[in-house]
Length: 67
Image (tube, rainbow, N blue to C red; front, side, top):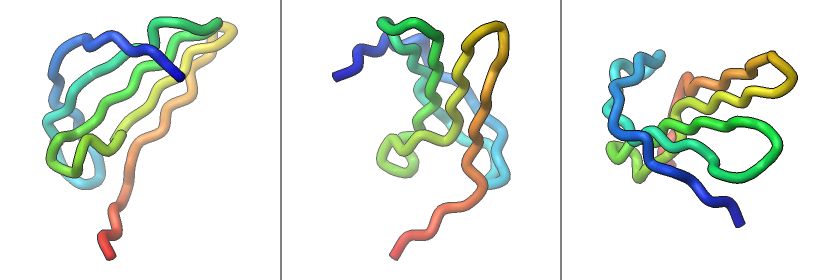
């Protein structure tokens, strides 16, 4: 189980275009994780950033396949 704090709304530029998102930050844990989820696609995460040891790893959605 993870706890998140809502940081607000933000428009995120992705290969899918500009998406309105809800920005969340993980409250607990040894490192910082920020997730941007879009209501347009059922609150699917479209960007994730994880900060650890002064480094950042970023994942950004590039495509969605709806079957």
